[in-house]
Image (cartoon, rainbow, N blue to C red; front, side):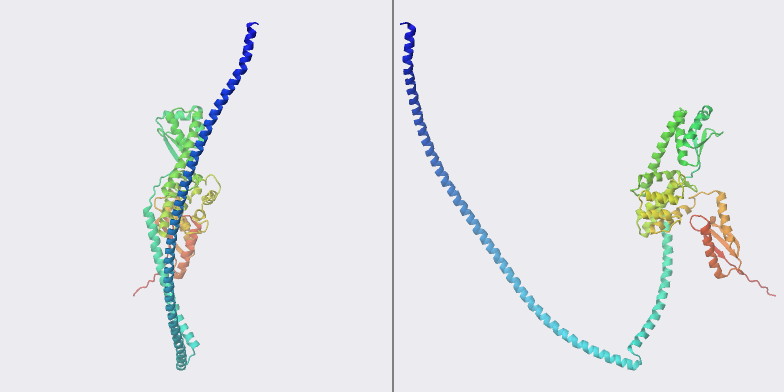
Length: 514
């Protein structure tokens, strides 16, 4: 037998034995582990039972404590509620007692009032009887019935009241007129004294100073191209004459004249004078003038103290800086009217801000009257309506020259302030020819009336004195003649303020003692 076979046989025999021994060993080890695990589990269960029992006892104790605590709180709350209910009961009992006392007192008062009422009823019946007896006695004595006596008394009282009423009305009218004149003078004088605006004399020409006479040739340019370009761009005429170191800008539009002046001054400073440069400078000057108009409008609004004016109206206000009327600057005049309107409104007791607003915007139409058809009153009204101004402002614009009837007190104030501003000495400049023509027209109007002998315009046209023929005009006719002349002057002439009409009738009787 070979060694390999013997090894195989040995292995076959040894393998089952090894397997059996291993299985037995494993079984013994498993049984020992299971036995120890069961012992540990029994210990754990016993421990858990002990802990559970302890927890149970603790929970029961806590429950008993909570129950006891809740019971104590409930008893405490019950005691408090009972005490409160007892207090309420005592209060209700006291109120019931008071009510009982009051009801008893009311019953006693009712009984006493009933007794007094019965006594009064008896006395009133007695009085009525006595009155009837006395009335019968009076009728017997006077011979008049009660109705006749009433009529007589009413008639006599009516006559007395009529006389007293007429007397009182006359006194009140005289007093009211006196007070009204006095107050009006006080208001006007106070407004004039508190507002003093400066006025700049505006003309139709502007003068630009030159550094030397050589600059005149450069302004004219080759074949006059520079001056033609400047005149075409600005719409202003340049007068270059023998005046040393000066160029005159002539034009009726002050805005264009200002644009030309600024452009020309900048061209002189720059030194580069040619058509392209002229166009550039004119455009810049136009923008600068527009900014200037807006700034002037804003400054006017701030000076007057009003706000919430449409930006376009602000720009138009600034444009009025370049507008004059009889030599009076339109913007300065509007500011002055606004200040005067505010002062008069404060004295009278109306809305000061609205009065200032209406006064500032009353001549707004003058900013566009040379560009659009229509009077400055119509244009101003349309502008105010367009930019949603209040009806009060619109009516003030429409009525400040009498084109419409004033519908509110502010319109009357603006009209008065406009007259004060225009009538102030030195506010407006007129030529001598215009002045003399106005005086001549005034005298011609007065001389056209029948019975007028001579007429004299005095006080710079503020007063006219009329001498009448005494044989043709009586004292009563004088009153009517003065009224007719005043109406004729109002219809025929335009003037600031008012004109006083004095009619004089003189009668002389001459005799000789021989």
